[in-house]
Length: 96
Image (cartoon, rainbow, N blue to C red; front, side):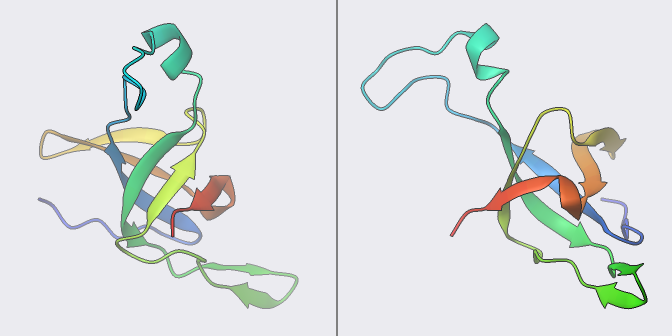
């Protein structure tokens, strides 16, 4: 895969497929599951940004699983693989 280095406060995320069936076996229709937040694995992070003269580093690391809304990322294709790029301010959570 081509090596991409995000600039500034951007992160590069490989999307993870969500569950389409609950643990109890209930199937979640596409119309409902598309409104849920998305998950992905961070594969590259930018160096951060400067705000009010202070450097703000990216709060996530390569390998972290992050949660974000479906409207946050810009979708790109690299070597036929779907990836997302977004500012780290768009991330909702990191899975622990």
